[in-house]
Amino acid sequence: MNYKEKELIIFDLDGTLADSKAPLDNDMADLIIKLLEVKKVAVISGGMFTQFEKQFLSNLPVSTNLLKNLFLLPTTGTRMYAWKDSGIEKNSTELSAGWHEGYSENISPEDRKNIIKSIEEAWEESDYKLPEHIFGERIEDRESQVTFSALGQEAPLELKKAWDPDKSRRQTIVNILKEKLPHFDVSMGGSTSVDVTMRGVNKAYGVNRLRDFLNISLEKMLFVGDEVIPGGNDFSVKEDGVDCINVSGKGETMEIIKELL
Ligand SMILES: [Mg+2]
Image 1: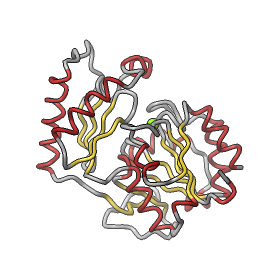
Image 2 (image 1 turned 90 degrees about the vertical axis):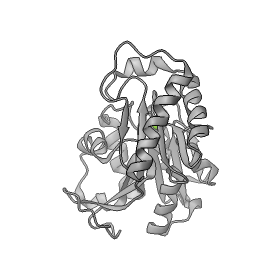
Image 3 (image 1 turned 120 degrees about the vertical axis):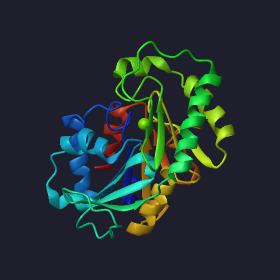
């Protein structure tokens, strides 16, 4: 793969740029800032924009003149946010602190209710025991996405990592949900989570919206993620024909960024 010809570098967040829901560390932040000086960068994650602010932006001491090169796609690419002078037109929603929404593909309230019910049924049918302790919400309605987190949104990382290390539990839930929700996309998200979005609205959808907004062909993009595997929430990007690198964690991602520089 010729890294030099890549114009847009797209990263997953959890498990790729940082540990699940953990803040971006300083070494990674330095590398991303250096990358923003020479390439456009996008981050696509299952979390909401508020999670991007907390986990990513607040730990990225970047000068504002570079932010026009950064594009944020929360909730698995079902929305996109751009910096005010990026050249991307905003849709109706105005956001504070210089960021605005480029698009949002929301699921109707009625469908969201139905998805929540299906997730509850899928858990029952999976025969997994309810965890002894739940940390925060288990099912979160994010408007453009409904997310199931087996141990709760706020569960400690160590517990999350131990819950489904071989991905078989999430895969079971994904398979049951796909049967129940044939008109939606279902994929594994973070270490304990499963995400439901509108059919065809996934990370690949976000990548294609970026292609149109930025006028950068898919060949000139590189995607780096830790779930570029069947059933994983990064896999749609590979299926779409974008050059993808599957990483085991942020250490490997840092090596890739150093090569890009
Ligand atoms: Mg990930």
